[in-house]
Image 1 (spheres, protein in one colour):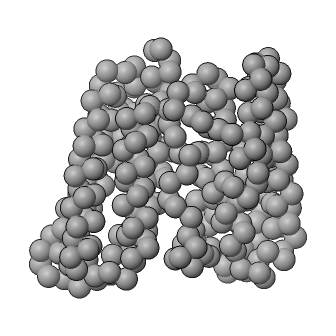
Image 2 (cartoon, protein in one colour; image 1 turned 180 degrees about the vertical axis):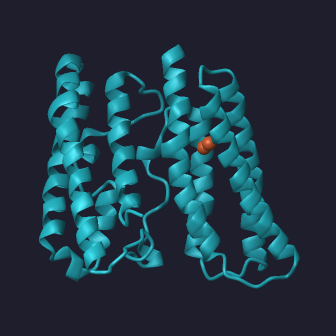
Length: 267
Ligand SMILES: [Fe+2]
Ligand SMILES: [Fe+2]
């Protein structure tokens, strides 16, 4: 598996949010050109700042820094053009230089990943930052533009943050049980909301079914954990929290953005 896949996902989410903005799917999106233009403010940038020094010294990493900074320079320009009502210029930039710069970041991540594999280093999004310095799981680049879903996603991310901040909690300690209860409630509500919306939108049946299967799988994972709690098993919550974080980002990027797109198409 591609060792920096998580970084690619972060980058793709950020880039697609800007494409959405230019495509006119902007409800719920609030992107400041200065923030978009700042390469240290996105999730990938935050992670890059936290990787170990020996990796930061690799030429492949320096190349990623350059390409990432160039990409954000263009992202800032894109948001500013859009804000100024210069839609044609924004579209041309989005389809031209911005798309090329975005691909270049993805390419630099591939090259770095290959180098890291050669060195036997497989960085995870969790290895680099100390828990206290971890950025929140939530990031506005995860907005899909449907307020009710975005609100629920933020709530889910808040619970994941708390689990990761208390990663050594045993699953049957009171605080962990409270978090798991809260998570069950919000996930149930959230999946109902999404499935209800998908039934009313022009989403291909196989996409709808795959998305629902993923929801069922996540609920099943949570049920298994609750059964482990009930059986008095001892284990820290961290493995589940890390799985949940990975799922959450994939859920939004690989599945929920389809709902945003489908809604935009019928508007
Ligand atoms: Fe979903
Ligand atoms: Fe979702």
